[in-house]
Structure formats: structure tokens, C-alpha cells
Amino acid sequence: MGYLKVNKTQITAYGGDNAKPQALDYDGVAVTPADATVLPNGICRGVFVTGTTGNIAGTTPSGATVVLTSVPANTVVPIDLSIIAATSTTATGILALY
Image 1 (tube, rainbow, N blue to C red):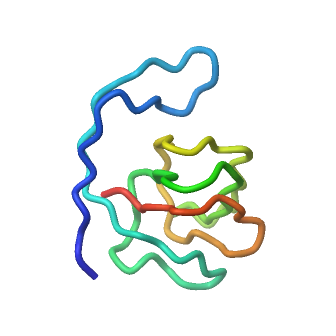
Image 2: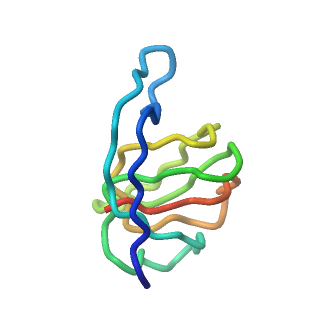
Image 3: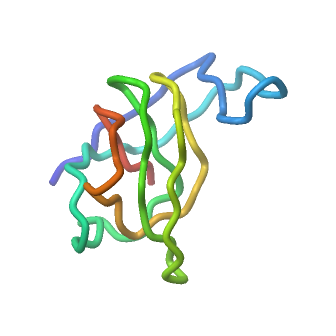
């Protein structure tokens, strides 16, 4: 699977009212959420929602399960994940960032 260069300026890091626009430069891979499938390029450094606002469910490298709720479209969430699960994920256009 090839990398998609995600070089966006003025992307708001997830953090609510305290978020500040910042320039980010990542390699991104489109992800199809799957409950038991480890991300094909290993643990990601974050996720980028390019489609619709929604939840992202996943598993951290330590095995903890998380659900990020109401992640806005065009938002980067800096989180290490090994799995992005289909169950409970409602956001679309998810890129795993490396």
C-alpha cells in the first residue's frame, strides 16, 4: 500500500477550545476500519479524518481500547494506534499517519 503525502497547513490539532492551527507533515495511508486487523504499516502516530465528523474506535499498542468521539472532519488526532476498529467507528475518510 502506497503512502499519500499529507502536507497540510492550518490543520487544527484535536483539543477543543485550546486547539491552535499548526503546520503538519505526515505520510498518510487510507484505512478501512477492521476490528481485528493490525494497521498494514504498523503503529501509526495519529489519524486524520478527511471525510465526515464521527467516532474513531481503536486499539493502542498496549492493547487498550479507545473511542474518540465526535472527531471533526479535517482534524488530526495525535494518538498511537495499532488497530482502527470498524465497530463504533463512524468517521469516514480516515488516514493513518506515519
